[in-house]
Image 1 (cartoon, one colour):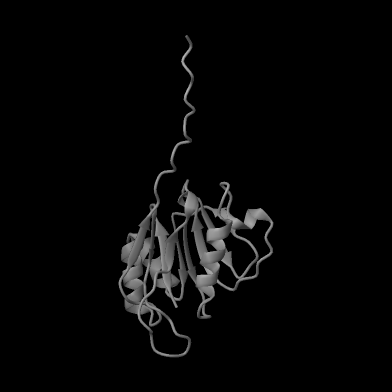
Image 2: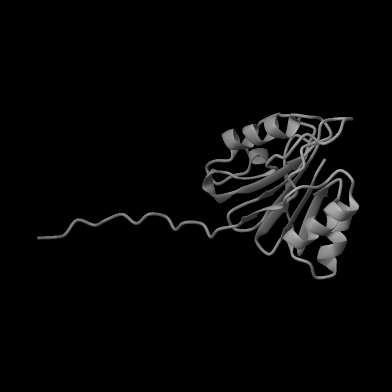
Length: 164
């Protein structure tokens, strides 16, 4: 499964690959940077569903709106956090769209979410919280991966023609 945490502009996740009811099968990336400066992290009990969800997000996060605002009826059983370029957090839980923006100091999802949330409540960073969760949650592990929210790029300025 997974532990994903977000705090102070940092999205962090473990990298242990889950193989259903079998032993871990290596490592994988669970958090991603999408076009437009969005960050997304996803978790699911079903092997392969997070990959399909991330692909869906890549195709729908555009025009400055998150996927849930675009009228798409998609039923993907995952738990996810989406952070927009301004740092607003949206939550997906086996629904047809994201909920939010949510207001809180930090967020955690996945099988180790309670451990990560408690660690952040005690002052840990998102990365430290995931590391702590991997020590407590048997479904999380491997190297910790982080992504930093970057400030949105300013709109390009139109060049003016010089008057003669």
